[in-house]
Length: 412
Image 1: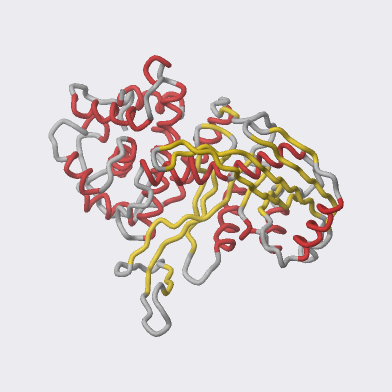
Image 2 (image 1 turned 180 degrees about the vertical axis):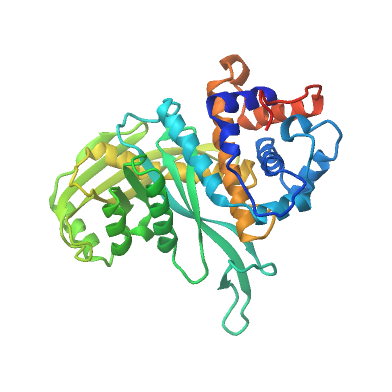
């Protein structure tokens, strides 16, 4: 299975050719950068939870040589190399893999759509009351009289949503003293330079409803769908007044109904300097859940509001706006949720800002390429009824078996 994965990503996704561009700043190194990268990639692919666990695996004779080559690194060597790794080639590998997947039509739509949508959101990947580095943000989790300083890392992540498999495109750390939108603008500028036509729309939470961020994103050519929450905003109040005098449309849900309002040409967001559109969805449905060993149904009411604005004044259908608004949760579930629960996203492999970034970028690449392999290369008889965690275990089994000179057709 592992050899099959290696040959698949080598032939179909140009993996080894992209690997040639990965570099670090070590001087007179005896262990090649490719061995470091492939060790970390293999660690993520079989879901190992630490560099020490990886080192124990690498010390077993004949087990990892077919994947990483004859010279294997220690945990300290991996950490040292990751500190000095250049993250730009890793970002380029992610971009190239996503671009190839789009060209090969490897993405499957979760609903009919002609737009490509990305979700922009922040995630906290590290926190500690003891360990800190130069890029750690700080906050007081105690009281003013007895402050307790907590150190943490937060990153802004861009992911394609509304499609499967999950594909994270880029990440940008939030530096001490700056806001999430500042980091998000750096990410967008870099991503747009590299892939200017990959995404059409950005969907975001209410924190990104800020005029400087929205103006720059619109200048870059992205349509914006942003949650509207603040009831003290003029835009919120004006939209609410129009909702009261407008007859909503009714949409049928699987287990309920939704009332939908769509008001256009609102000028209450004066800082933006252009009219916007507000879509509201009031969902009422029955939710079935297990409580005290009994199945019960309860009525749920959800009130969603989104601010919609496009740089060229496009007016996509209301139904697709609702889908984009809810698609933002793909990043929370199939992105952050799966990575945290099954891929150790919240584990700090080595507390150094560059090493943490590089290891996560390799993690995102492993998530995407193994998902493509499971979805497109394995026959239904092999993968039906099995989780990707089980399939990752099959990859680890091949390391135990050994018996091959190399998993790659053309070893790096």
